[in-house]
Length: 569
Image 1 (cartoon, rainbow, N blue to C red):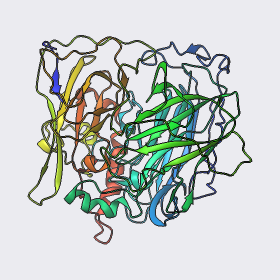
Image 2 (image 1 turned 180 degrees about the horizontal axis):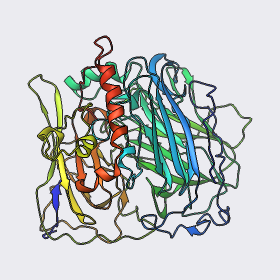
Image 3 (image 1 turned 180 degrees about the vertical axis):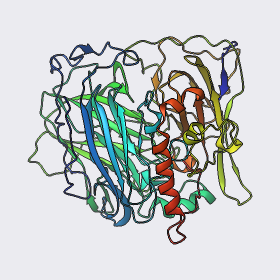
Image 4 (image 1 turned 90 degrees about the horizontal axis):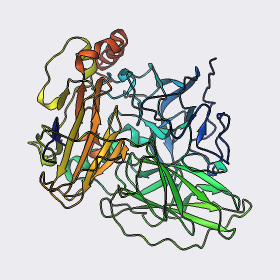
């Protein structure tokens, strides 16, 4: 690690979403319905038309000629997913929102209508590289102005990756008010299975809205949370209902897990059954077996379970980890897996042993199936330190690198670039990456005993080193350059460091931030302006300006104007 280069710390098919029938997701799981490529069968899931699990989607993507089109409407709602009623926001009258699915290589055309009574919005498509389509990343203040009430924004991009992810608002704390939903891009799998069940989202939940909790989070740190939900279902104090899955003895099932929480690390397990992990985020991995799966905010895992136990009812557990957050219902965040679909009794099964901790799955287990090698660093530079302070108003602000981010809803970076801006304010926390196809390396570290899930837009990053309770040492720290884990969310461990790298192969303004909702709202974010000179040619300036005009017109009305009280992202 002595020699670090650019190193710093820190045939068109159209599918519509049907009108929703309920205010939350169904209680019982179902299998996904989608076309698949010839040859992709239970006997060989590695095949995908003329491609396979061996195809490197960085270099080659199917040209399907298919457009998948969805309509999403964001509305105010009143919900009671665990039996306790509260105000919320939802998509198509549902929390989580409807499943968006496509096949690898399809183009997604996604229409988002803001029908909120008094708020802006945007929609981010988490984990998608947006390769040369930066304008569709959906981040306020970085990519676009917020979409004003009564407007519709269309996002269009190609699914160059495959796997499991989610979409969510990136405006204020809206994602954790209920503006989120699952996404599946179908493609090959690193191990065989018989059937695929619907994706499963795990989110923490409060009986008052996160907006109402925001002042206390700013003044006193993350608040205690009341509960957590599995695909929009949960129980609390005898009320509510559980999510259920049905399986058949002798079959193997593919499950897709999504952590959509604001501030909860989960440990996932199915009593009596192991899970074979086959993908992390959008990256297939060499299959490995676990009985308990560490699960960080923003991350996704694809797993295969085999129905090889005595036909019965089994608890599926999603245990919030008290080592880094506080949840009143941490012992009862459970779903039911039934071999017998006629049964209605609760399971009596015993849990796997687990240790309360807030960790990622060990990097030694996360071996990408398609091998990449990272170029050895050649120069050394500053670190991206993570810290927290109280401002003059006695409210918490988090910083990464140069500053605590504070960006303006009405002056997105992308529009500034398109209009010829060449200078940046310190609180926009911009890091310039002017050169094409160059490896850049970042050390992110903290002295604080708090872990942070770090998410990068526009790229997967390569995890070169990751340690808790340690200080990085340029003389002794060993970097893994030979096929290291690559993904878009990884934990900066408590009192430790995270070393990442990525290739500057995607011009744009890309946010990197903590995925704890409170922390990103308090400024724990920076932006990489990558290959700035190439960005204007990729941008529809008229569309950016039109969105901003509509937002400014709405904000000009003193009866509806909203004061920005957070980082802007």
